[in-house]
Structures are given as structure tokens and as C-alpha cells.
Amino acid sequence: MMYYKNLIVEIRDQVLWVKINRPKVRNALSLATLGELGRACTEYAAEPALKAVVLTGEGNESFAAGGDLKEFSAIRTAAQTEQLFDLASSVLDKIRKFPTPVVAAVNGWALGGGAELALACDFRVAAAHASIGYIHGRLNITCGFGGGADLMQLLGGSRAMLHGLTAKPLPALEAQRAGLFDRVAEEGERLESCVAGFLEPLLGQQPQVIRAYKAMASAAQQGLSGEERRAIEREWFVRTWTHADHWAAVDATMKK
Ligand SMILES: CCCC(=O)SCCNC(=O)CCNC(=O)[C@H](O)C(C)(C)COP(=O)(O)OP(=O)(O)OC[C@H]1O[C@@H](n2cnc3c(N)ncnc32)[C@H](O)[C@@H]1OP(=O)(O)O
Image (cartoon, rainbow, N blue to C red; front, side, top):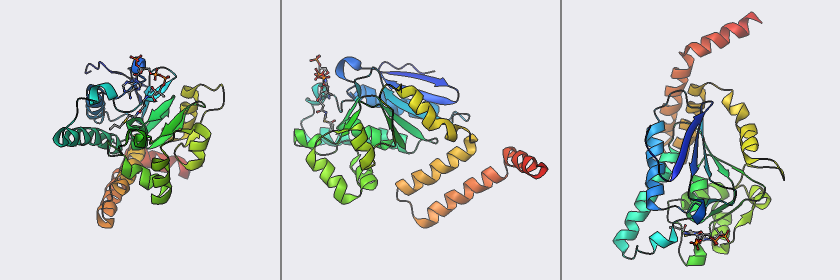
């Protein structure tokens, strides 16, 4: 297992838990933290038994307060800014393309690049006190981690533009109504229990079925052509059809 300085990484019951561990700076995303997130995706993508990933932040104040503003203040030239964008968006791509679903467990603030990170995940389950916002406009900038496209896809161009230009974090229930959060914990409910409840039906499926759906969702998200998407669907149908788990389920069904 690799060593992580800014993350806590563990596998529990076929779920990989990745926790950003910089609570003193509200889990701000430094370059090293982004690099480690990318490394964790690469390290665990090859684990065949894994069924899901949960990405969260340490503590109960913040999921991620965006890019590390102290560190990033040294980034001044266009070339350095391009480098930052390319690094961060390639890390978020690893989450988008991770072979299993990735759930953001939003334990507090998800702001700026932190909101982009949450939207790169397949689902967002939030604590009752969480907030999310593309607040980049407050710093007179726009999305910096390649998360603009996710916002447009999730909300549609018009509502996405309104959200970004309002530059105001949305509290959990409002964010759920807007479509940014998939589930919000009840007042007093532990976020971990809420995530477990959200994942329960999904984890009942076999890893190859879960991976098939993620592959199809990822292909759609990447804007692959109809032909490419059909090829991916076909490949996974063959893999799941010829798997022993399929024939065991057929036998059990026919014996009823
Ligand atoms: C391309 C990148 C795009 C971006 O992500 S731009 C960044 C967007 N994010 C922001 O503007 C959020 C800035 N932070 C805040 O608004 C507040 O800190 C926040 C998250 C609401 C939490 O408020 P509080 O709970 O009152 O905490 P606080 O403000 O006293 O902060 C505690 C310590 O955390 C630090 N911190 C918070 N957000 C940070 C950031 N993004 N980068 C670097 N350090 C950050 C803050 O400086 C403070 O540190 P210290 O204790 O004074 O040493």
C-alpha cells in the first residue's frame, strides 16, 4: 500500500474510503493533495473486488474549501495557470473514469474547486449542515479544475450559469432541490449511516455489473460517440453474460 500524507485511505467491506486529511485548512486542495488523490485512483482502480469509493473530508466542517489559496498565490503566469488546470482536471478525470461508482460524502463546505471535486463524483450524499457552491466568481475567476462541464451537464446551461454567476453556496436541502445533492442526511443522522443507506442497494450487485454501469455512465459523460458507447455496452454484456454469477442466478431463478 502506498503512503499518503494528505489522505486517509482504507478499504471496508469492498468500499474504498478516501478522506482528505487537512482539517486545519478546511481540507483545502494543495497540489500534493490533488496528486495523492490521483495516485489513490491509480492504485485502487485495479482492485477487482472493489464495489464503490466514498470520498470525504476529515472533520465535520469541510469536505474541501477549494484550491489551497495560500499555495496557489504563487501561481501567476499563464503557463503556470495552465499547468494547474491540467493537473487538477486530469485528477478529476481519474475519478470520473474510476471503474466503480464514486460517492462524495459531503461533510461540510464544498466550495470552488471543492465543489468541482464533488461534482466529478458520480453521486453526492450530504450532511444536513453541508453547503456546496461554485463560488469562484467571488475571487473573480471561473472553474479551475475542469468542473465547469460537470455543472453544465448536471444543471443544464441556464441554471448552471445562474449558479456560477450567483457565486453563493447552497445549503444542503436547497442543493438537493437544485439537483446538486442526491441525498441529504436527516438532522442528527450520521453522514456515514446515510452513505451506507444510499450504497446498500448498489452494493447488492456483483462487481462486474456495477462496473458495467459505471463504464456506460462514464462513456456518456465523456461524450463518446453512439458507436463507441454501443461497443462498451456490448463488451460488458458479454462479460456479465458469460460470468459464472449469471448462470448461478439463472439456475436459482429456474428452480423457483
Ligand atoms: C482554481 C481553484 C478554485 C478555487 O477553489 S478558489 C477557492 C475557493 N474557496 C474559497 O474561497 C473558500 C475560502 N474559505 C472560506 O471561505 C472559509 O475558510 C470557510 C471554508 C467558509 C470556512 O470558514 P471558517 O470555518 O470560519 O474557517 P476559517 O475561514 O477561519 O479558516 C480556517 C483556516 O483554514 C484556512 N483556509 C480556509 N479555506 C482555505 C483555502 N481555500 N485555502 C487555504 N487555506 C484555507 C484559513 O486560511 C484558516 O487558516 P488559519 O487558521 O488562518 O491559518
